[in-house]
Image (cartoon, rainbow, N blue to C red):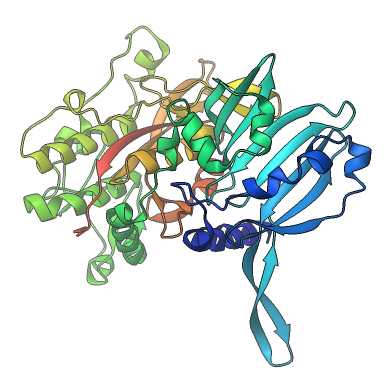
Length: 460
């Protein structure tokens, strides 16, 4: 319920931004005029005096209403200046359910400003500006010796951390958001706030197209459809050999495939409008890594494929590049791997800790997948991603544990018309959220390859 409420707040807050924003290019409601009148009685007073202040409503120069209030925890007290946001709620009456608009003042809505101070010493800890429809995205400023430092945070990860800013900390007591943008334009990664919802048309067309076909997908242990759309085996000695399909499935237009077949089916849907055929199987099985034959992976690899979904997704992405550019490329020539490292640290239960980033032939820790996809969604709006899942397996036969890429999925990040981040995951014919996907594969690594999306999606 809380998540739904926050979604409504973000949805409506983003929708009203063009009407209520002051002079800043992200069109965020600005409280700087209000804050100038709060410095003496709110910002510079000890906690016992701030407690004497009543929650109040004030309007900026264009009539946008903000609430000024105090909130406390045992260690920190926060002075919040939050914009009025109308949310729609269901009102249950004798005549049924009626919609009613309720005004609220969420502390993390676009335009909210928060000053946090130590409850014991009264010293300022940080000032935070919220500007995005997603409340997990914000900038904050804090004293660092005789300097003021800045962070840019995306869903718990630092896209910028401890960046020196050449003004005093109390400058941000009254600084407008437009001033913050101007001051930090070259020092903070504001490119991650440059969102254009119309650019996600291809991704959304594909998401809708896949959803319409999910009822046709039937999971099998091994199987895909070849370049002619005929059912074949993928693995082992039977790779490429015809595969029997139940007559009832054929009659009902049911497609039988495993996770690899499903990712191929999705990519094929973007390729067939260009080439008239689907991808060939043999090139998708080409190895993209090499390991020592004497190591654990080398010894295990003699009996089973430890890199199947990594090779498969890389080669699928490379095939897409080749067909769409009408030139033949091997995976190594395409640059399809996602290997960016946009984050330096994260906020965790242990405090602020370092982020490992991309590891070659392994990918990223799955806990960083959502913030990574947020960045990719902003910076690569016309792409979707093939995910290869690497698990750690305990051998159980006295041999060492080993790593194996044995699952794959297709991921579509996007921003909707209200600037709200969304992400749809499809795995083996099943739709899931990014949270469900992350929960399914705890402590795993995810390797991503990029594929250009298509608004001409035409799957088998």
